[in-house]
Length: 534
Image (cartoon, helix red, strand yellow):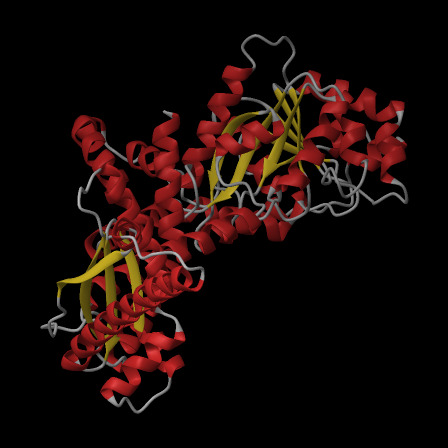
């Protein structure tokens, strides 16, 4: 399973940054092609010189000595006297430094390979052979000069020229012979443009991969549910898909005629997981919904979760405990002037402050007038009493609070609830922020705490999209075609990163949305009228 996730993650990364890979490969190939086109052809000719130690009885020691001499002569061949000799012999129009740049000498056992690169095939072979002959002549002259000096030293000291001594001295000399003359090469040595272009493409792909790796490392956002779970040490209870433009007109999916949409199905999935999480917990009825920072959709999640629970026939109270920037009233088109703070001050009772909504079973306790210090208000004994009374009046109490890292209000509320739902926007929240917020919430010792991913896009990174692509398809199938459509859904899931929805499918989706709006036209109009009345 872990390997499967890693593969999917790499596919998502490739899908996200494919343009960097394409630009890197194409640019390097174009640069290599430009240089290959502008580069002049060069020809490589090689002359081989055999080095042998002069000996009447050659043996293993002589072979090793020949190899050592070949290595020694390799450095000698590129000296200035030999290069000057070649220039004078051939009448070359350039100096020793220019000639040295064309010559490469390699020792290969008892062979010396003299390689010359030149723009002319014939000139390259001519230079290689000339350097080889000049090297042999120069080395031979050096040896004869040493032998003459030795004989002169014998005469100087009055020593007779013994034939054995002269033979011994001659045996120390080496013989250089032309093992293979250089011939004009047929083609240029730099003519393999295809190989160069392939190497450039590989280099471009590797460079682009390093850039993509650096960008991914610099991106501190959470890239997968597994990474989120490892970072916060919390269970990922569910993911909420991002609302479409039509669904976002009314942020309560139970009221906007899109009960079968992907976000609506994901809220049902969250509700089911929440109920499973509460099986082994007594009194699991009051939940706090918060986030690390503003704009992550905690209020939308709280309102839709409450509406989804009420749609199952449960009695639900939604409390707006964000006494700094309340927004629950906007979701239902209600007036927030009567609410939680009025009850805390004793101006009204809880029953009078609870506002009915168009969703059966769902009531809301709005914020009321905003106090100067909300933290003190939420810490009061009166709020604890109100929370206990709300538990008695409903199956579930959902409390919307300010973000954790913005103010201390949410941390004050943690000990007063049975569980915490931590809403995370994976496209906006940073790893360090998540870690700080989860640790702060854990210090409040909540009875239960889990993460809810919000605003998950169909093009999200990591493993977010694959599951919900299949989940949405499965939830939209009819019972008589369920088994066949499951197979098709799995096939579409595998093709998802590489294919766009077909026109026919988009037309069917548009027709289905139109039908949904027609089916729910009357309730929506009633909701609008009720909002105006309020």
